[in-house]
Length: 95
Image 1 (cartoon, rainbow, N blue to C red):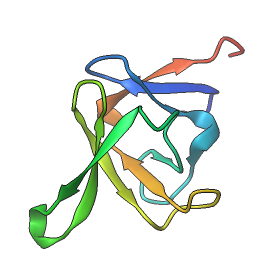
Image 2 (image 1 turned 135 degrees about the horizontal axis):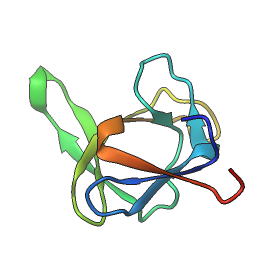
Image 3 (image 1 turned 90 degrees about the vertical axis):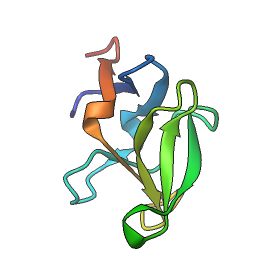
């Protein structure tokens, strides 16, 4: 998605990420360096598939969104690697 707007949880419509924080990570997954606010998502330890990762869930409905890694751009250095199917997009009123 290249328009300005907000990615929301596909299950409950909770606002998750703004396009202002979206970047091209080269992974093929929608990637962001920060959620819309600190209360939008929750983080949980994920030890599946013989590795340890940080799972990201919707803070409202607990739905799985993806994982966060410490190899993203500034200003946070984080890469929220999200499953595009778990989110819907709402364009801003300017688009």
